[in-house]
Image (cartoon, rainbow, N blue to C red; front, side, top):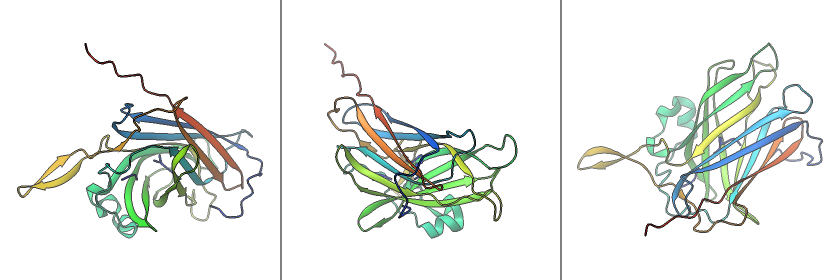
Length: 258
């Protein structure tokens, strides 16, 4: 099952005006590995945020990532186990079974003071959470050490898509304080995956645990004209919203040996 990705995967605020003037720009990046029609794949997604004012962008509060139609979630074996948020908060990744892992990622954040204060959060994990009203829930666990020491858990819910999109991963991002009672950090860049790449699941065979690679979400057997469309709406603490899009190009046709 799906759990993003996102890269972050990352990803509401009711009452925010969609007409608020955005001081942020966002570039969205998406990919499939392997990029082969009908094949089990790992979805890669990421984004880079900048400010039009020359300072730090406002803190990110919500991401709605819309994914292409026709993705096959039925045959995937991702997320065979459930990770409980309480266990993840209390024990970190050790509190969740390996078969709940969905993907990996990293982030780059900056604090609103000091010079050269940007730092990477080298570890973001996506895990299968308890479903909500029948919808898939992805838990994101970010382990930050510097400049902010924090272990953060937040959730994204996979909602039905509309139009050209087959699913909408709605993720609310908690405010990450730079220091106690201080201003929040700004997220600059996020990269994440959802899929079997770099994942190992385990099953018991003749009384022994055996590692194997789970089946990912499968690509459609046909590619729409212009490629597979992704779209993401980003909401910021200053009330602004930005929509970014990216298409994964159609893979080259398979050449059959004569």
